[in-house]
Length: 333
Image 1 (tube, helix red, strand yellow):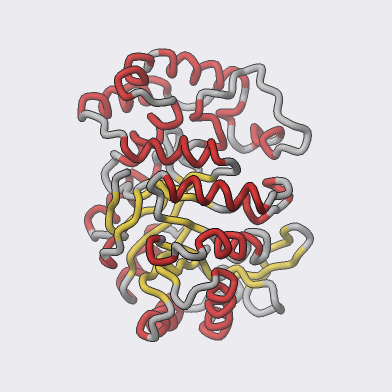
Image 2: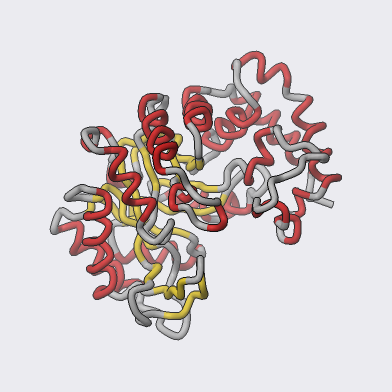
């Protein structure tokens, strides 16, 4: 496994991180089996992963609690990242819709953040959080000024409750404003072989300003594992049955184009003794500004496979060859 610092904080973390959304047991990810979730976390840790990313809104605290149970006795070897800003305890903030039947709000007010950090510390069974991230930017009508939010986070850092500050899902201008307002260490956002728009701005700014990046959906809901062909049938309640409405790569004709591209990488898979998913993760982590890649896992095998990508080092010629293939692939039809 390779390790890199979380930006200016210099906290060393594995380049492959474990995303724990599925452990919350939301409708989108189906009911989680806590025992299997804990085994998946242990497998990740046993294979060199030290970065675990969670959030209060993943099962409304359940994912944090499961993660806390799993890391008990190993806390000093783990980098725990969680979030704030998705609020559901009352109507403070701006209405954000319903999730699993629960009304929630975006609130980046100091008073709600102060409550959230205490709940997360309790859920995780720890007295400090390594990386505390704003889950999403403030939205109308209650748009807490970024300077006010960062002031609160800086106070939490001074108190020793958090070690580093991160943001998630922000625009470039918001990203810069957070960076100017305090000690910003990371930015979390979607980035993959099939969605490379962040290279134009977010990744470039991150590289230039020593800010770590935590990318999610880097396997595009399984498309970049090579295991989904045009005739693949998902289980009845799988959210990917309807994903083609907003992610056209899931259309059968586009899946077939991906499969053709993957077939041209057989020598790369042989040379690195890896899977298509591991190659995709290794390529993603090799891009300028892409420092840490988050991967969800529900099983021991998935955790082990994801961790394996962290030891793959691609040659410059291989990185460029894959980029050329992606450019030739073009946009979905």
